[in-house]
Image 1 (cartoon, rainbow, N blue to C red):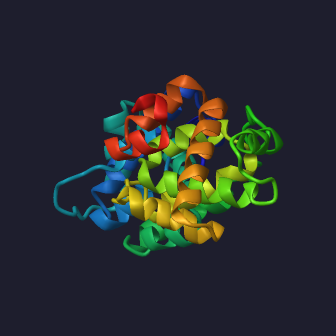
Image 2 (image 1 turned 30 degrees about the horizontal axis):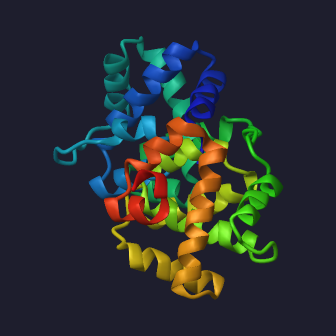
Length: 268
């Protein structure tokens, strides 16, 4: 997954346009694309995009059938740019979309479009130079994170597995957009568990009772429910230190009361 600033920067650079045009045409391209593919495929793409772009793929109406030229005209009209600019930036959006969602999901989307679209998509992706994606800096190293678990009674040899298990389970219980906000703030080694949790719900919250949440942690860490409860409390407290008050508060707001009472004593 690309973060929103990376997505816009990629469109800006590949399309050779100002940032404000890149943002506007990126959303317009996705809005028009959503009318040309199935609702299920639009949802699949949205689950792999930054939170601020997912709404651009929301479309409740019936599937529309129009050609490539009409596709580009609609983008130009919706983004309030001329036709050549619309195509130039739409190509950049397509290439960036390929980077963001991966080749398999992009192929699924491509297969729903006519031949002229597929040829245009392939040309756009092939023309884009490879872009190195930078990993955002962490606010707390893994060692510091594990030290905080140790302060709460988690044995050092068990701490990495505990951190991964709780982080992944928690990510499945919150929205993909919120997990995305947390991702740049946690230690690098915990970003993959966050993304795995998001993938389980395809960006939406997975319904999970507190006991099921703790049972998953217990199974992953070979512990009993009591220990899993302590592990979850320890990781949640360490996450608070890693992500800061605002993001922690936003995350907590998405959890049911039983989670808050059990995992965050100060919220009880």
